[in-house]
Amino acid sequence: MKAIIQRVARASVTVGGEQISSIGQGICVLLGISVEDTQKELEHMVRKILNLRVFEDESGKHWSKSVMDKQYEVLCVSQFTLQCILKGNKPDYHMAMPTDQAESFYNSFLEHLRKSYKPELIKDGKFGEYMQVHIQNDGPVTIELESPAPPIDPKQLAKLEKQQQRKEKTRMKAPSESSRERNVPRSSEKLHQKLLATFSIH
Image (cartoon, rainbow, N blue to C red; front, side, top):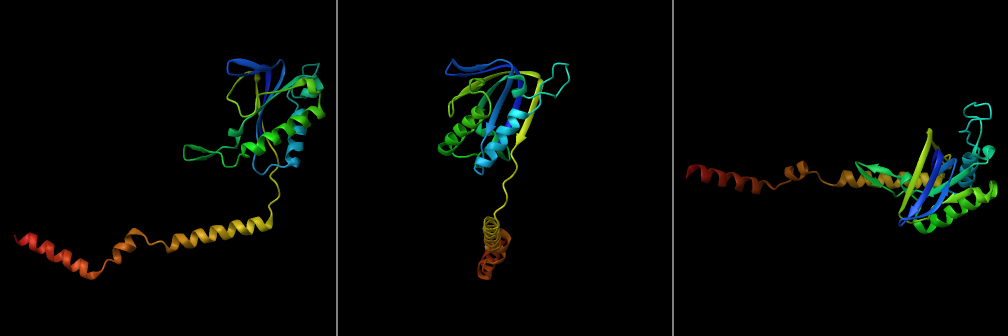
């Protein structure tokens, strides 16, 4: 799971020209859910978001207070594009959780966030909709968070290694252009030479 946290003076979400959500001072959270995410990653991210110290204390000391300490608002926006992997210049999103699963997971994330803080201070966009997110970044302060990678399953790792080995074998068996040229029957080569000789004589 990945999140971009921005400290904001204000932020809002508009869908189809209508503002559906807005906050004043606080943080805006852009959240990207991965196919590998579980309840463990969800809880880790909620804990980090709410305890991230991006605000000043009463004496003006920087990086001292969290959004909960200051009793500020949180605006969450689901953003699958954070799970992008570039293939050349083309974005690839196969690591993003499929929409039907991601919506339920995102709603669980919001529910856990509200239980851990004050529900009335948690706002969100509209999952799966085309949104305009208006962010007035305060600072600017932008921090990227990523949940710890889940432990590797040895069985899954062995399966991936076997798949890679099969790909390598297939690649080695496929004849290259140069090998195909070398395997052209000699009779064809002789015919080609005779034709060349004939045209050169005439």
